[in-house]
Image (cartoon, rainbow, N blue to C red):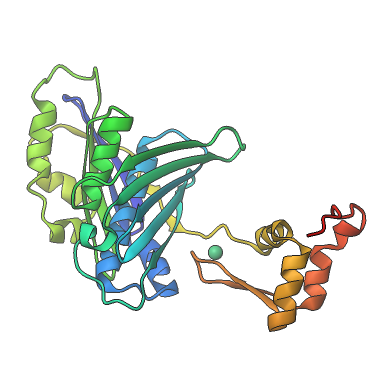
Length: 289
Ligand SMILES: [Zn+2]
């Protein structure tokens, strides 16, 4: 089964849907960090949710979902580009053994959604308090309060895959007033194992076999990290020559690791000098403390 997003539409009801299935994309995340199982499963659910959401929003660039909490898991981050490339990471207290359950892991906090357009136009950011005790509840709450779109999500994740289904009410479409309620009731019967095991067509056939459903061409989803040596160089430039020299004196090299893909970027004193060559032309301001 390929990693894909499958869009579908109820022909006679105001309902559209998306199904996502992440195998290799999800395993690429897991290969790079050893996430404890309870954390792994909520991060997988957030990854599936980000893919589903990316399919319903119009943007060119990056969609970034963040769960920021005060529990043993302080941060979950998932990024999905408009080309459906994805990456994810988490920050957690590695000295503690983690509890099970989304709210037990993240505690109180907020959910932040950022849309960063490729053309560097205005970044959009929406923030809501964490709501409910599941990743799906947080997303549903955000969609109803910030986007005014009635949306339901069903998410599942394990060591092999991250999957999910989204239903969204489409205002003004179709004459079947009961269609939305009916679709949700049918979708509520989905089991975790079905989400994890069934491909999109089989899932739709099983859940909505009495409905008239239009299927769209599936879109491929894949793992890709957008980090690069150039980006790290820019970051070191912003950090400043003095700071970088300080690290070099202390450790001999400057090493920067990407939190998403774990790739390590190392700079020896010669490399580090190259970074600041441009400074010779534009002298740094002579601030003294
Ligand atoms: Zn990276």
